Length: 485
Image (cartoon, rainbow, N blue to C red):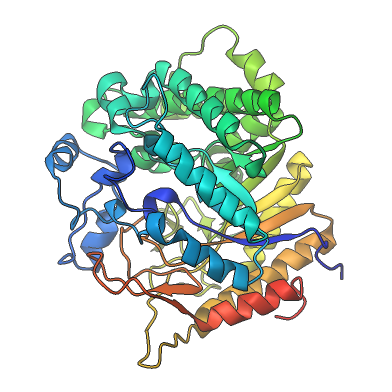
């Protein structure tokens, strides 16, 4: 079996909206994730329902008027804005090779359409990225991880409006010039297929304001595809030789049975949920099955002259994806459902699941890597992978998370298998390398990190960081380049 290449990038990932906090500091404007509401009194069912797949005008308006942050966890995060040096020091102790985080658009342009950028915001990210390099870590920067300045939604309708593309490209040009070669890998959009499966997060639209909700979702997606292509062109122009990728949330799907209808349903699911997005970003055009897909969904979108040529001329240098679980597909509507990242699917009787119902399938990662590499022949990057779980801080400061070690170990083994299969795999950034606010259910108790943060659901706690058992395991994995697991 092949070993991981010596250049393999072991790392960790977070998102600004889930980690930074300081929502009213440093000249930052209000962003769309700042408006997501959470109540500690909710039970598990209500927390699951509160994924904000459908933001309402009532919730949105009320949140805009609220100035406190107790019910809005993304406003306080884990205070990474103030603790990043301490957190990066722990990552350096693990010998991490790369750190993935996102840049908050509202910290650079508070309103999104400002004439000049916020210099304090630019300085924060420049200092952060320099700190990464000083500690021996490359930087993997996500330009947009869901949240946009609220002003763009209120004034222009957000991604529904092509003007948002102009504002986004100005933002991209500003940070490309401002950070330059401090960023080693650029990602214009996090999980670009999220626009379909969690529209408020993915494209910042409010369902009750739309007459044709589904068409609006795909119109927003088209504007994001155009913006993605323009970002690639702009960064390549300003920073020759730079690497700019595309990313989806990978929904790995198996037919529940060998019944031909189930197999065909799986092909359609893969095309409509995954490949539609990567085909456009990697092949530079809307795929041949688009017309039938749009017909079945009753979708109509508008392009302008030059869009198709732009997409064709500006394809991605690599593809990244998040991978947490797999699901099954069948035409039998009575099948039991399982939860997952952004979407739910049918339960697989051969798999166990996390407390939150996400099915654990390490081999599915190898399958996904092979499928995507065979389809595109582009370098791949696992931008997110991990397991959300409740961790217990013992009296002596230890956290025994054998379940996380087991999860990571088995996924790393399958990554190594994929490398032996011939997949060109650039790196792996474990999700929530330090505990952050969960994006889906907005909980702090659903922890992913190998670094524990002493903080509760309302943001209270010492904020002290502790090393979990998985911290030592991951350090050993990195030091041995994936050989000692």
